[in-house]
Length: 382
Image 1 (cartoon, rainbow, N blue to C red):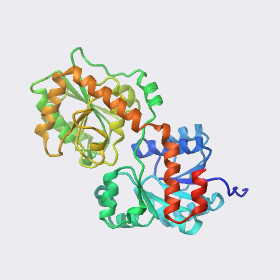
Image 2: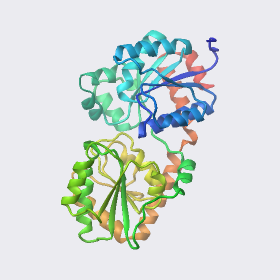
Image 3: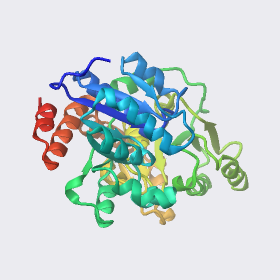
């Protein structure tokens, strides 16, 4: 393989998976933004045969699989072999559990290792057991998608100059195109829909969503809940919904949904009841669909949702207030639409993909300066 020119910035993105998920969607946005700026970008993935592969291929972004060995150390060796020809300036993880791969590879190949932190720190550390502290501390810098996670990483002892934030974004043009797609679910006349889009796992607290929905429906039976997503708790949640009298008329479990934009464009309200989040993609999608949002302050939700402006932020344990705000939105259709319109404006102004490429290059420049790498900083600034 030909050696790469030294005057072009090269970025290796290391992914744990390319399945449907918030981190994977942000990876695609990142890779596309860099490619559009003619940055030499490649994606290295532990898994293959997953949905977002086709998107990357369509954009002409090289995708390399390095996950064949079953032992992690052999995968690291495989990744190092693949990176030696590319010689990236930055080796960036997009999943917390892949941070150690980029850290080890950068030590042997060169390039700055950028670790990922995509949920609140306690959730990531708890989910990775013994490896958690290593995954946090091994990369040269950490790139978080939320300010809350950055603050907690600093509390855990990371140097503030080595922890950066890049908020999630959304491609509004693509979202709007998808919104107009046909969607098989239909509401009955007079129904009001509250949706949530989530993996069905404990951190998302869909049990809370169901309890709140049940309480509001006692006063307003025209309210119907839609849960889009799948996960290990689905059967348990369906049983809870049955016990609360929500099935068959009060809630619908859609399972995995590939047409989230089309779904949300047909809803009236969005609810997020999580205990743990980083920067919730689902809130951006709800706001892009001009829905008012009621959310817990998980992760950076309270930064995205301006309380009383485009929705409401409710303390996690305060289900009574959540019920009261939901009842208010059900009763007031015009303020509901006004809040939704404000949410759309906030997304368009602050969380669009339009400036993503320049924002990530600016971050690369800051990272290179902080590590005293003037030549790399110059490439990132160009």
